[in-house]
Image 1: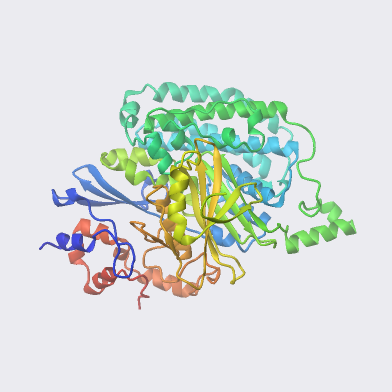
Image 2: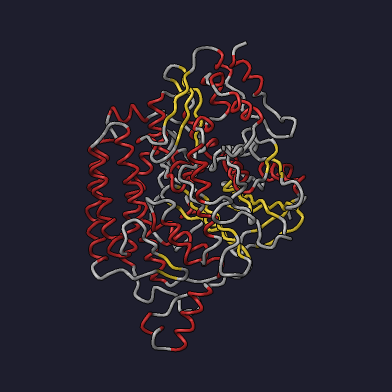
Amino acid sequence: MSTRTLELELATPGLDAQGQPTRVPLTASDLGGEHLLLNMGPQHPATHGVLRLVVELDGETVVRCIPHLGYLHSGFEKLGEYRHYNQIIPLTDRTDYLSPMANNVGMALAAETLMGIEITPRCTVLRVIACEMSRIISHMVWLGTTSIDLGAFTPFLWAFQERERIYNLQEMWTGARLTTSLTRVGGLMADIPDTFVEQLREFTRSFPNTLNEIDRVLTRNAVWAGRTQGVGVMTAAEAINYSLSGPMLRASGVPYDVRKDKPYLGYDTYDFDVPVGEHGDVYDRYLVRLEECHQANRILQQALARLPDGPINVDDPRVILPPKSRAMSDMEAMIFHFKQVMEGVKAPIGEAYVGIENPKGELGNYFVSDGTAKPVRWRIRPPSFINLSALPKMAEGHLLSDLVAINASVDIVMGEVDR
Amino acid sequence: MIPGALREEVARDGETIVFVAPERLLEIMTWLKETPGQQFDYLVDVTAVEFRDRERPLQVVYFLRSLERRADLRVKVELDSAAELAVDSVWGLWRGADWLEREVFDMFGITFRGHPDLRRILMWETYAEGFPLRKDFPLRGRFSRAEQVRQALNANPEAHYSLDELSIADAWGDLPDDMRARLKRGERGTIPE
């Protein structure tokens, strides 16, 4: 009896003596030819972070792919239980670090829904701008890294150039390129600086040119199409059953976009289209993300056109810190300052879940409060974690080189997968 | 009211929360997914909540969505923390539950009966310190930083392969006897000396 046969007996499906489910049985074809076990990652440029894939190969064909996560696990959700609501915001920067501003917005919206706070019109529009800027930089990173994975170097440079322009704007606005911590519960950390609107308008004017260049170089490129078409297909029914969200879900032909179907931040008042794919393969995911960049650009233009004047923070001294000058000169302001810093903003008993359409998919923030200033539970619904869970299904039967394309098409950020 | 529900509440975001008994969870979930007029075909999220008040039961929370009707629903199961923490897995209804249930198992120690591959997902398989998101788990972890570093340095990287993977590789036969015995027992967490 070979050692492998022995293992097959150990791995019978069902429950063991302790009532624990036993492990997945090995595939039947395992007994056929010589299979190779290949370890890919956690330090591998094509796994987009510290993802480790253990791949069972029959020749060059993937028989099974077993992802291993947790190399970047930081316990953000646990940390959040020991922080005031405003202190949680810096943690959200570090989850999906390719679109930090959108994460800040998602968390703030959930906290505000929990507390029943209505934000100001100017803040709403500025948050839309923040979300759409994030969508563009996140998709630009995706486009650049995926094209590199598939052997196209030039689009990477174009995409990262555009991303750099948004990063400069983010730096201008928040002082940070990556760890923006833009929002506060009930408002924003700062209003936009003077020349921000002109510079962003200039960006929205020239950005479509780059997108069109990328489109010309990739969309009808024989190598690109050959490497991506028909690879990693998820049908609409499978995509729904695997809980995919965002561009992954829409590329499979399911027209669900949180911005349209459960609007937040007044997205229902903007004129934009939701691109939907047809085949659910890597190529359609590329097309959907490329078109989403055009649409994000449209939303940015509309938001800039309608940006109202007015305060960025709600007028509630229990939630928003008074200006430092007043806190140092006015007794009442100083008390509010003290109470907020020492005690934090108290949330009423209850729970709230708010999902927003992050570049990666539906980012949910779920707060449960027991009436204190710190949440009992802070849960992030991580879009790339759930999208990645379909990777073994998508990779099965494809070549090892296609696994790289499929993994790239999921658009994962390990900071968010592991949290 | 959903048939079989114990009670209903409304969350602060306006969503309906339905509480169901643990033993009827799978039956009610199947009904919610397959009944015309309900059609909750999309599982948004699965998570668990433990309250600071130790008297209160743990909650397993399922976020459901009907893409057809564009409607959401939250289903909760309450588990007494003194009793066995186990519910039926909804893996058979939604494949998306695969990793989500594994994460809840990893972080809270709640067993999902019928899940085909219930292993730790974010922590490593031999992790011995317990379940990180439980309230009795200290923020800094159970062991001192020095102890954690010592364990990490002493860890055998081979132990990070799961049983299936080792059997695929035929590496099983090459493992040292003690490790093979440990993996066979499915033991989680011996502290290496």
